[in-house]
Image 1: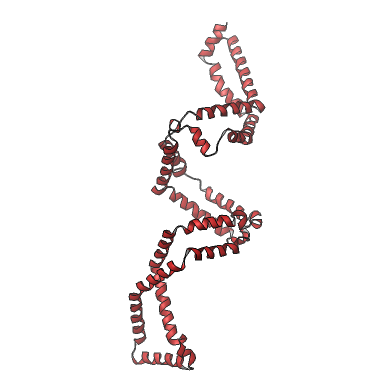
Image 2: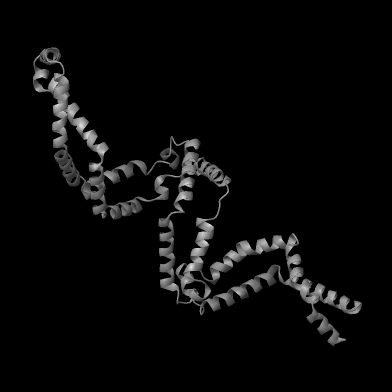
Length: 344
């Protein structure tokens, strides 16, 4: 390209850059973005979700960003600091529990929970069958019987000296027949072991009868009434910064492990596949409407966020550099040379 043609190409480039820069600010920029948003929404009315993406593409994003992405070691520390700031924020002292959830909402949650009778009965059964609970029942019964025999029965309470005589007789019997006390304990505990299933079964039946919907409703709502006027700060009293940070770290470590499980991936895939079953063959606009996104919502975010960010990028020189990177190759290309030669 001759010097004259080069000067002309450079002049055209400069004018083109100036034109683009003028269109990317103020009212012109907003009109441009509004026009493009309208165009995109028009296309969303005809293009289906399946044409834009697929189940496997979405799952690929979940794998790369959610499941496999390595997270910086500073994240749990930052999260713990943020949680501490929330815990110590002034709003904790001024907000009451009923400011966050009303009594009507709490009642609604409770009524739904009371419908889960099968799950409630299962929890009771699991507790009853737990070895720790069975050992607790066994020890309570044993200690109760022993205490009753030697201290708390009607005779020892009513007749002075009887309790002491029974304890003395117990000691003398142990001296006369060594191991008698241990033998009694062993036999009694053996009887308890044989009787325990029946005791547990009766305990379970009692709880099923006692924990009626009305009883649970009254108990929970009584607890709610005692708490609803307390501040959030009062409710988390005793939870210090250190304990909170430890909980955050534990939660973070759980998340790192949980996201790698087949269960998490299976749940994510179930949601994504169902979404595509519902909307895959329908225009994207229907999905956007379902989640409440329309032109006005997008333009509100353009005004609040996009325009200020673009202003900063223009002030920093990024926009002009971007435009030049896009245009300069064309004005120096063979096609541009050919056009300029034709003009001459």
